Image (cartoon, rainbow, N blue to C red; front, top):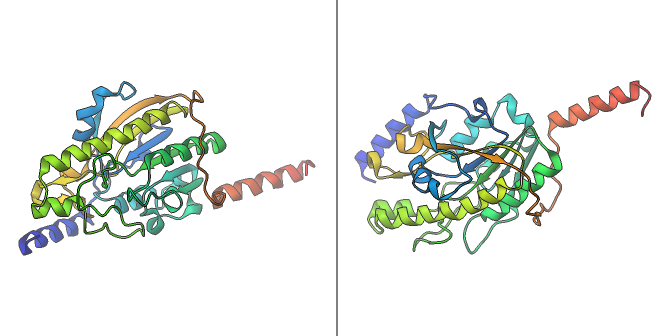
Length: 291
């Protein structure tokens, strides 16, 4: 990026830190929230007619232009977090979220990473979400898939090093850097991006057939394809290509057609809120003479 472009981005980010962009997802109606990482609204809308389970795709405004910003602004300090279970393939949870603030936080990226693909398989997130829905029946449940975020699993871009697994910034070898340098064309990246969305939507369909309730399909942020001279999804950058995310609804029903096989290496911790609630219930039962 040129000096002028760098200065412009820093100005946008300085403004972005002070702005409240959009509406928190907790202000909307849903039982299960499916988060498609880095999915633009126009991308989902372009393929939605091919998927019968999806309702009309609306556009809503995200609270963040990157995963880290979205996670922090959505969950940290929000009272609904304690009643929410989350299954996530996104490594930024390791830096921005506390497990005991949730009814359950299943960080699939810690134990189901696919080294060859350089990301967390969509099927792993589906399996764990179904298991958590059946085992804990939380008030709210979030399934955060990494796709369609790069790496593009069905159609990899040559030179893409995949995701950083450490909860840090993305690897330098990624499609947005290659696109900015002119080493790959916009059409090539868009086609691979779309293929990755189709890849994850198959798993979303499976999820909708194995959990009950109102499912909302959205994204944490979008991606820039050169709009405003930007590529990818830098933090604190309030531009439409990043903040315009999809919102579609699905009626979920657990038909029992999928039995999860993936399990975390250790049981998920119980949140401090739920632990306190359980202790209060035990105290009440003792007072009544049942314990």
